Length: 310
Ligand SMILES: [Zn+2]
Image (cartoon, rainbow, N blue to C red; front, side):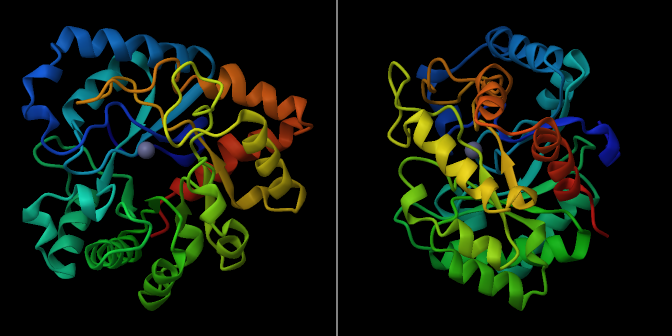
């Protein structure tokens, strides 16, 4: 809907999805939903988010994964929730061939255009750049090309970068350093999920200046049908509190990575963005986090991260 002053972001869910699907899933009629179904699944969740005091929902759905900016605009208008759209890709392995074959220069131009001019003909500008590590646990040549293009676009526009996965971070950090991008402009995400947390050197990343995303809160083994990346609730909370106690609060961000209305897959039942209010914040209070720290985690840190550092 336009640029949002950082002071007006309010409580931020920094890594979420209106709807995420693998490229091509929109062509599979098994999964087609009417507009009524999509709104019926999504609007109540966003209204509830707003009622709980949520201000801003960052949609981390990249190009090719079902990003639908005109739809986001209508949702924002209906619910009063600020929605930040992204440019970039979830990972090299979700970039369609047109982009997978493109040069760093071309990709950087695409990202800069979406940040400064707009996304397609929507008139809406991207407020964050998504990058990620392809399946396999190592950055591929294409992942690296996308990271470098993102770094150039971030340095040129002042918009931050949000990563899918923080495993194999050495090549990523090398690229950001080479491109002169300060590492506090990068949120290394999914540092907390059950599959990747053991292989993610969160403290090393923070020692280099990066931010760490505990952004899959709620994907827990206690769910009736937990996904493969689930993690015991207490284990994740203890891991988070350990980093807070070591003095890293200012480099941490938290979110739920939920889908309002998944595309081309059933999604994970029983998990929504409102986990942040219904479970996570109460858990953090019980674990001893004070109100100032909760404000830092959900308001101040995301405002600093999302501010355009031109
Ligand atoms: Zn995500």
